[in-house]
Amino acid sequence: MGTSNGSFLDQRLDADALPLAVGDFLMLAAVLTIGFINHNGVDQIFNDPTGWILTLVPFLLGWGIFGVLIGAYSAGAAETAKASIPLTIRGWIPGAILGLGLRASPLFEGGFAWIFAAVILATGMLALVVWRWLFFKIVG
Image (tube, rainbow, N blue to C red; front, side, top):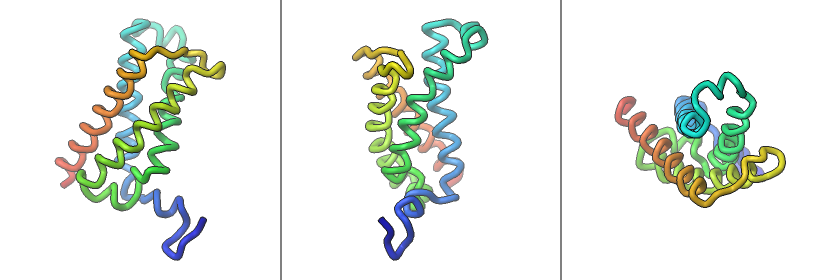
């Protein structure tokens, strides 16, 4: 679906948003890693790195898909916190839901628990919002 202003992806991806993307993925990976360590211990990352990676992938994939679709990496999102944070929230909710669905699937075998759904929705959103708010406070 092209427009005179560029393709769908051209409108959703802007090179100026690259620092936001790097920070988003690092923050989500940190939140998920902290949860993994809380439940399994830090040694488990080294003893079972596949289990750790399989904990990260569904949510990073969900965020990657919906963050782009919603426009969290568009030119507008890279300009101000006021534009960026609402897009982040709107992208994280379906991204986390996709991550939860993938995690509960036979592909990842993580299961599903309502408490985990609430925790990952809240902590993931908090991490993304705080990161983006700090980014714009520091960068200007």
